[in-house]
Length: 565
Image (tube, rainbow, N blue to C red; front, side, top):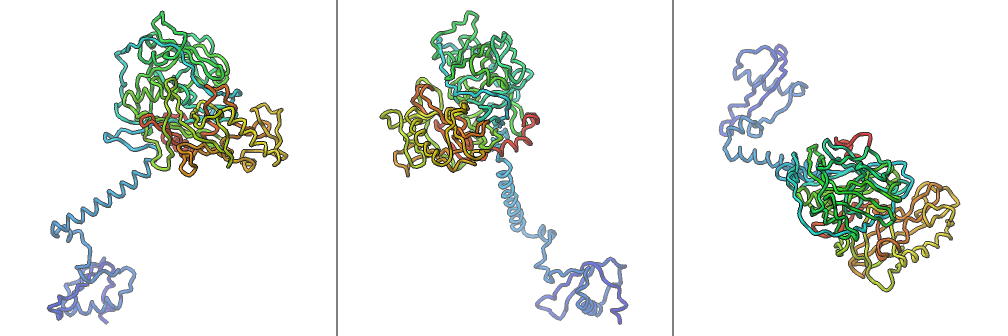
């Protein structure tokens, strides 16, 4: 009856067990309720309350708690515990936070790269942008540089890292776009001048000098993507500057520089050329975390362009030289301590094209890379290595004459891949087998020297890739099992022309360079992350999805106009 008259308890109930040495004291029950307080219960009432609580322990507002206070967690008891327990608790807490921070930083810095001790970013990302409307194909560009002048360092007072720059190792990453066909090139954005202006430059690991069309005035220039760069007399590099000597070291007909300016002339394998003067102006870089860097950068002011090069300048402004030469962009950045002398690019293997390139070592993949040593010559700063063999499927292709060792040049400035004459003819003979599989050679399609027509519509290389085999380049060892391999699937040497025919993107390189080298162009470099590590003198590659960085850059790089992504 008393329980019917008692108010219903809604709150927290704590039940304490009696001490082991005196169990006669019974249990102690303490209740915190939201009802009006009642008089202090007597021991008899405690016993009654115990019965009441047991019979109503299923009431939803009440929750069961450990009856042993030694098993109950309490911050108050913790802080009154011994120092050993207190320090142990905080030690476990700090260790958990450290693990969380480590995992978090690993997942969020995939594109930004690791940061240095002073907090500065270690990489800059350069996207490669799409370009449309260029009808001509850009051939491989191998420089035949001309003249040597006596070396004398020309020092400018302002030839230092500009405000906002820090002389520490970092890197640059650029978005890249374009395609092998129909555009025939990949390009990115470079910001130059004060105030800075944007220019579209072809990404070219086969060129030493970065140059852009300029109004000096211009004698012969393509339409270009932007207003011509306008130099001033104070921007002109002296003919006694050390970089002037690097540009002119192999030229036959020297420009002695009556006006004390440094002239350059570049000739390419397709007989195109660029003539101009060297300029020093501010180069502006923006890191992936938004910080800005500027430095004085030497490049070419091209006022006279000739040949097929004018076709590629319909939508671009010049060429970005990325070779091993001292005047190249990566070497200049490395000499100022801004990056390690490492260059890399990743060209997408889909129909849209694009990708990215980077300067510095922070975006080099940590695992899965295949490396070969660079091969050096006294007359070339190209990225090349020695090759021991080529296979079409299981069939080996011949090299040049009796030579058992050849050279391979990695050239992002070439749209297509070039084989030596013997290897090319052997490959063409091997491809005759596709005629028995339903593909017929069609000489009316002049997109490339060899094109095939099918008796069914061809929309992409995937529709016909089963008719062709993988090309394998072998490095390092004559034994296949010990060799380092670079594999080129059908997607890496075939294109689909505007007529819907499949065409061979490997050409006869008899008249390119000295005719003894294999040149891997964009068509075969797509789908790989390719790294040129000048610091460690090696070239590496790894299969990669080159579209992902470009999509993430849309959110991370605020210096890239949305209209260009």
